Length: 339
Image: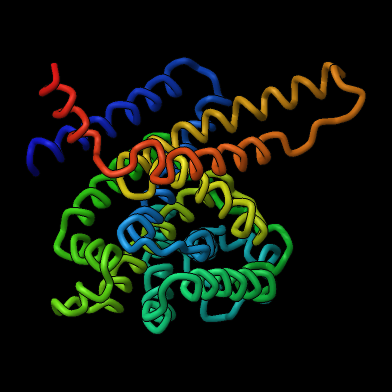
């Protein structure tokens, strides 16, 4: 790892550790919960950046792979004595299998990766609007399966009984690991070729770049990140429904990446921090205004509206996001050379 990459990695690790330590030792449970969810979202956004940022293709299906990771890891960790009540129609072959939460989280990540590997390769031949539409269709298909596969997911009802195993330390460690992998992938041969295809598909193809294979590798890695984040999230929330992995969450994760900057790992991290804390501040403001009866009506959806307006403003004023093309390390070296 060269100096620029090392500086970038350190610049990402420091705020993660600072937030983790502040949340752990200040003694505010609400802040610790926000910080843990921030780190899980950071893994999701970094996974989306690994594919979308390098390929230039918008993917709506990312959050569905989070659902695969969540349901798979939960399936193998719900206590045996509760499974008959939680999943009464569970397949007999699966009923006696019980894993530790950490092993199950790993299994969920691998399951998401395998599903992506199986379904994505034919789709990776598509570009532009066709690729976006098919990724949205894939999200709809997988959401429909989650809602109706009651033997495994409990259908549209709440899945409960998942043991809580995700700590702030585990979430922060996962976020740091995800940042390291995302940085390595961006500068790897696959990442470089993937960006070459993004910038000039015809020229990259003429040089021998396998467009479908490159995109497939990025998509599979992205799904691995999402499945891992889904397992962490499931073992932190402990009960959830399929609606948790659909349009609202997709919009939030995309907002984090677009505002921060899809082209850089640094932008993905910055966007996650900015949007998470802004989201929580707006939610607190909305609740305070509603409880104080400042207005004769109830404010509803203030956070989502402001996030949407922020996305529009960023896309109009700075289409590449807050950090468009250079990582923290390159920005630091430029600043030092000017000084």
